[in-house]
Length: 386
Image 1 (cartoon, rainbow, N blue to C red):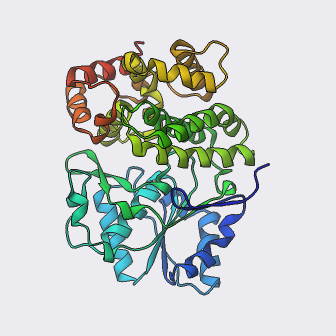
Image 2 (spheres, rainbow, N blue to C red):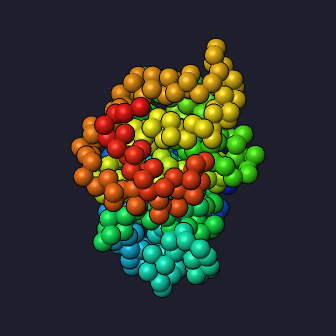
């Protein structure tokens, strides 16, 4: 079994079952006396969150709760949370939940000290230099799903409702100062969500590995992250009480978000607009798109994938074997084969392709896709053509 550990790469990470009990003391050590727990509406009404807030208050903290966020958090959600934070005079954020809650929490912590609109901090050029760093609130991130890795990310994905597009809000200081990876918080996650979020973690590690940019440290992290998915995701889906599998998938999720400093690619370039247009689950979108993007990138990634399959212990290393593994894993986990299964059709193909090529993730794809290339990948994913 895995014992407890303390890490400071990429930030300070406390790993192990039951370590959520250290949250109150962690707040005090950071000078946070009035934390605002930011989570999603579904978690907010569960005993897990109610007990968390009660324990923090019983520890002498003045803890508040904000949960008015959507599955794909919007700019309006972030500003509502910012107003709540200011009104109740909080002095730190506990981002608690899945990727939506973590992204919203980090964005609120950024915005409480700003006087510009949130879109002025979109990850374009040097927009991050506009941030008033001294006004940012400290963040403790506590993931309850193993997928996005947002707890170790320096950005938040926020939906611009007016334009139906997801935008990346970025600043290096958005990286939470402290992270708690407690597998006991994930044991109640249903198998379908465990599968979708786990495949999201796989997509992060896989796209980081395939990115053409030079970052050997990220490459090494990505390779081991993919192997952890191979070994532990089926176990976590089959038995939600498997603490070792739950721990390793939380670690894998953080590894993916650490690795994708190297870059993402076409999976995310397509998943972001599709999430904005159809409000579909991000991890499920990446899982469906994965084999179609891999096939389109084959000429540039084949050697890397062959090395990866050697590390993963494939009897016959190579791209074809890896593709078979991906398709088999998706089937085993109940992931749909087509976007049509999510009621996404060909109607907006040109719009999706245009949005994909403009998405920041597009720059990390190993093949420089045109809008026509993106449209073809999208249509293949709608219709199941591999």
